[in-house]
Length: 293
Image: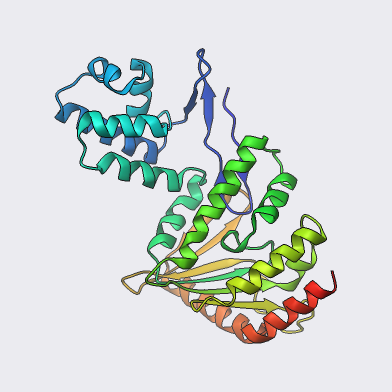
């Protein structure tokens, strides 16, 4: 039986799984899993081993090894370590597994953008639906996941929360990435998860806003002039100093590379930065909002 649990707002999903007769979970084939499987297969052949000969060395069945090589199963941590040791892979298998783990939990439409974020030198985000994943607290993330169908199991919810928290390492990555966030005041006033969760969220936003590489701006609820009626979007600068955009809707996402479209998004973001409160004013508003809770 295939079970798919998506995160519509951020494009993050748990792995698509099927369950075989042994009760083990097996993932639907995708490019990332296939690439990892090919890595295992290449090192196995380099060691002049068949799948049957590899099995006792890693402590897994032929079916398990075959599923990993075919890109149908997410490898366990134990399998990765055993395969790395058995195949003398110079750390390559561990590196491939870490890369796979970063992508696990990402919807197909978001994966390319997530890859680009990891290598970006600047990232601009305008959000009017909810707090961006890079700025969420664990409690806020749990509350949001809980309320967005399809309902996740406790294990799936915790996996998603852990994934979002792990992505936030980008904020502290060195050399620093230049971040700009513009968030609608109404998103915070919604009080997702309740007053206590919102107080913690505001405290977190205030702390993140103090980082030297982060500009955090709030767009007031009352704003007669507003350049963002078309919805949320993101812009990033690559290490080659090219710019790309990203737009997302229900179950879809699009990386934007057309120079004319990028220019339009730049114009809109520049206007939004002028219309939003500056970082100091935004911090003041956040403190007042917290005091009113």
